[in-house]
Length: 212
Picture 1 (cartoon, one colour):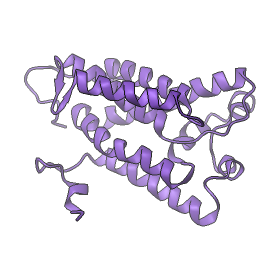
Picture 2 (cartoon, helix red, strand yellow):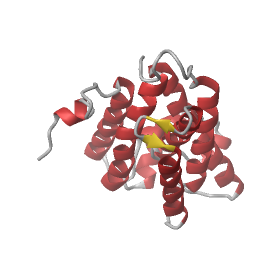
Picture 3 (cartoon, helix red, strand yellow):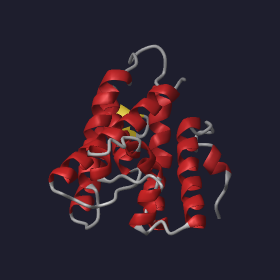
């Protein structure tokens, strides 16, 4: 039976990270509202409410779509598949780098991953409407991978091998599936790694990386 305390507290008794929990909540709220007023599996409906589209971004300069599309999902399965890993891994990252740095990494890698997807899609004359938090989530993966390396192979329960295998398997799943925005994944992963190099480092000794 689900213990709702697990949604607010980690197994070690610490409160879950505020900003990450807020981001997950906003994603769920946006999905619920869009479902109430329309059909989140309809690309045209999603486009009207801020989903990404190569021509709109590249020609009409609607750059806001790189951010609004991060909080939109095509159906319940898409939402759940994104929010579950974000809820747990985002919690790890925010506690390691702090609220502001986490927000920079999350939004920055999501936008840059989306921009790479839009740029390549525009070059290929793609008319695909894009939405989802997966670019930002891969940014979380990338940032955590850097931090695990930086902290000599371990960051709490995360290890280089475990996290690296998770990244490889998730990328493989995307590349062997249809309808997956793999360029956003790769762009988000690289951006998250680089952003963590720039803003995410803290001293290895002294203050714990889990103190905000």
